[in-house]
Length: 167
Image (cartoon, rainbow, N blue to C red; front, side):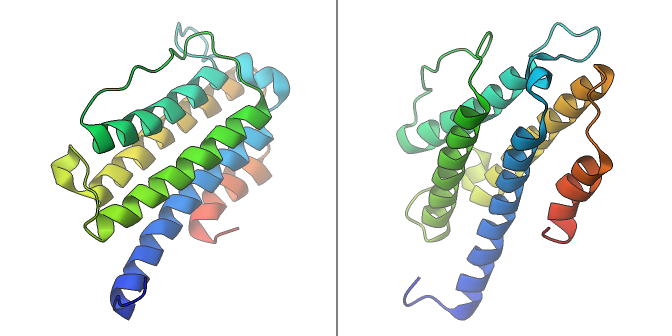
């Protein structure tokens, strides 16, 4: 960030910290889910299991990054039936989280631009956060309906507290 104004550096830092907080919440949730919880689905749903929700979230990140860089839709493996371990999930979320941060930084300095979202990187980041938050809600519902409701320390203080107090 050499040669950039303090205001530019500060704004980019806030953007990247916002993305990092969001990604840290996903990692925190991955670490807090009981082992059996990864195979649950909301009652009455034919949708994705919890683990498939996480795989889908990561696929969307990676897919958009690929599209923004190449203009082509990637050919990604399907999420249905995917069953990575907790460690593997954390690893891919750390990697894709860093890749999103890198793209956001490049876009901020005019070195890259999203191919959609009005070429607005912040709008794209907002989409990712919104999309993944929707799936976190589905994950929490699946756990709750299957008798694996996470303790308040995790579900309220942990997930929401990270946004509000950074803890």
